[in-house]
Length: 290
Image 1 (tube, helix red, strand yellow):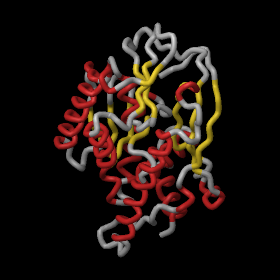
Image 2 (tube, one colour; image 1 turned 90 degrees about the horizontal axis):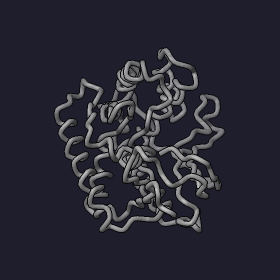
Image 3 (cartoon, rainbow, N blue to C red; image 1 turned 135 degrees about the vertical axis):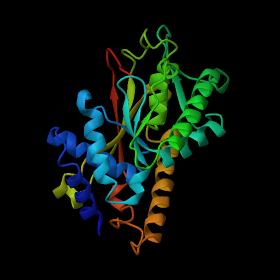
Image 4 (cartoon, rainbow, N blue to C red; image 1 turned 180 degrees about the vertical axis):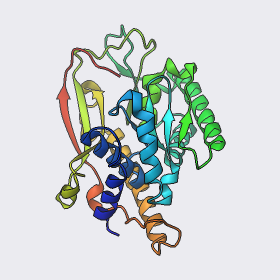
């Protein structure tokens, strides 16, 4: 089965969802991003909150029947209204790797209210963040062990995570640059600060007929003063390297299982067109939500 047919099967698995066509298609595309390794977690903030779990759970149940690798995808509920789709294997591997090197590959920008200028934090300033991330990993591993494959939701609503929610969410969503604020209720200091907005998209005419492309993969921002050469910054190169490595690993695994003997539906290796293109624009907003 080629990638276009497989993508169409995933889209059809979400057709029954009682939400708008745009939301259904975005949910299906996010499943594919997780499957091929372009993302390890996505925030499902585009579905109605009152039905977000019901809709996502129903679609995930159907998608899991298409390919056994979807069994690693769960719904993660973290703090109040924050729901994610998470590929637990990819996500835990990346998060643990970050902790093992002391967050050395993570660009953490302090934009706390009252700062004259946001700045990149030094390792010695990250003690609180490292402790919170360590607790998050331990709790996530515990919940994964306690969750059977038949279940599709991981519940991690914990008040201890709420104070650092923007930082935690950015880390889980694998933003190359993550923001930190010392008081979530006070806001941040990014208002009217020139930012570089990075946007990664999949673009291909090959799959335009199924509504796949162009599709937003990931977007994140960084203060302009901290990214003077936006397309040459190390954090971008590291993120793209990580994507290539992960997608190549997925390709090898899918090719190795090519006889389809263990699969409900054989999916193709990661197609070349799926690797995202990067664009950078400059923005300056009065208020920036984290």
